[in-house]
Structure formats: C-alpha cells, structure tokens
Length: 264
Ligand SMILES: Nc1nc2c(ncn2[C@@H]2O[C@H](COP(=O)(O)OP(=O)(O)O)[C@@H](O)[C@H]2O)c(=O)[nH]1
Ligand SMILES: [Mg+2]
Image (cartoon, rainbow, N blue to C red):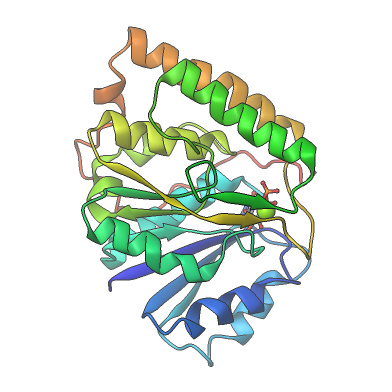
C-alpha cells in the first residue's frame, strides 16, 4: 500500500481505459482509484470491465451526480487514508498530465517534500496546445493567487500532485471549502500554512485530444472569490487551527456533498 493515483472522471469514455493502461504499464506498483460522478457516457462501466485485468490494483468509487473535482478528491483522500496508502497522487483522466511523470513526483516526495506539484510555470515546465485564452486564464490565476496569498508556489492551480500521507492526515479535510479548481489552491495553501515543504517538479502539460473540458464560469468565479476568502480568513481568523486536523477524523466514512453542479 505505497502509491495510489486518484483520477476523478466525468464523461471520460474516450480516455479512461488508455489512461488506466498507461499507469499500469509504468510497472512501478501504482494503484489506481477512479472517482466517477455518475458519468452519463458510461465511464464507470469501462472501469469495471478492466477489474479482471488489474485485480487488487484498480478501484472505483461511484458518486450519484456531478459534485465537483474538489469533493471527488476529498472522497478519494479519505479512501486512501483508510486503506493505508503512503503517497497519494492527483491526476486528470485526459492525458494533460503525462503518467510517466508520476515517478518524478514520487521521488520529490521521497526526497523530503510533503507535497510535490507538477508545475507548468517553473524552469523547464511547459504548456502545449492549450488555447491562448486558457493559458491566459491559468497564468492570470497563478499570478492573482500569488499576489493575494503570498504563497511561494508558481503553479498554484496545478492538478498533478503527490501528497505524503502525513500531509493529508494533518489537514482537516472537512474544512476544505471549495468544489472546483479553487480546491487545488486551497489544498496547497493549507499544506503551506501547516508548514509542509512544497516542491515544484517541472512538467509539460498538454491539452486534451479527446472528450470535452468541464471548465465553466462557476469554477472561475469560485476561484476569484475563493482566493480572497482564503486570504481574508488567514488574516483575521486563525486559519491554521481551522484547517489543522485535530481529531484524526479524515479516515472516517465519507459524507457525500449535497450540491450537484451543472455539467456545463
Ligand atoms: N468526479 C468528477 N470528476 C470531474 C469533475 N469535473 C471534472 N472532472 C475530471 O477532472 C479532470 C480535469 O477536468 P477537465 O475537464 O479536463 O478540466 P480542464 O483540464 O481544466 O479543462 C478530468 O479527469 C475530468 O473528468 C466532477 O465534477 N467530478
Ligand atoms: Mg483537462
């Protein structure tokens, strides 16, 4: 029970079997957990059809409706802690993140990082084939986050991450507020505030070739307001004690979110 890659999915039938195969072809003893939000396109059925090919290595958690990337990961984190995994990864299903880079994130954590971030905006990091408006949005979000929070992370919205178990145990996962991409910022912010070392590992991020992006205006709005809220709370309230997990309650069973987001 060393390394678990969590992949959230919503309508990823074009990618799902290929991304699962790609992780197992690394032959690095990664396990894979898919968190599917009732994808109407049958993503979960494809995952189930691969169970016999990858027994005791491939797992699926199904939620009823689209409830956001953040709560999908929180669900996965609790599952991973309960099963005893030591290194817990976040990765997209759409090949924007190259599975071959998982090992580099792992090594960064092995070498002392609490959190290893696959980063587009450090030296030797890159973005390929993304439309200019998406690059502008992503870079703008990074700059905005750094100006407001002063967090020393160049790619705060990155979704290709390895967490050491101790980091997820230390964070009160019930206190993580966001459902969309602001979730990525808040997880790093929480880890940083709790004093863990965050290392950025350069990666090349590629736009998806198959399927559709789930980015929408609600996610952007949550990001803009969410970063301000984080800063506000950390200035005037005790964010540290808010986010610190004092009850070791992260491994208990999952409370499902009530909110269901529109798919587009
Ligand atoms: N379970 C779950 N997965 C989601 C949700 N929204 C997005 N995803 C998955 O999160 C990953 C990133 O989403 P994507 O649409 O590629 O976002 P983009 O790369 O920012 O355009 C993909 O694997 C999606 O299938 C959601 O609400 N629930
Ligand atoms: Mg994507």
